[in-house]
Image 1 (cartoon, one colour):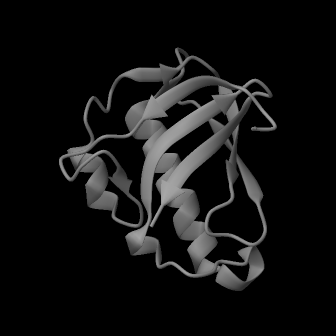
Image 2: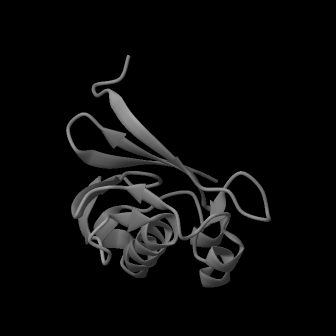
Length: 120
């Protein structure tokens, strides 16, 4: 059983499949419905934990007063994974290259944090 309850799920689908390829800025160009407002929040903490030995959190601020678009959220996640992979030792990256990671879903929890469904 999870330590948190999921309040909302944002799906990331692209022309390549039911995921967004991380580490590939051009992947965002193939994202389905990129301009949809998917989270009606001005700010959000996102927990990054795969494939990291040391969980880390980044804070995102919506550019649009209505909230985050799917593309904006995907871009923020992609950019921060790139930062993490630039300093792999600090974050304890293990086992997977950035180019092999796929973002499938974003989960907004009852604690107001974003958790990522990322796989290799």
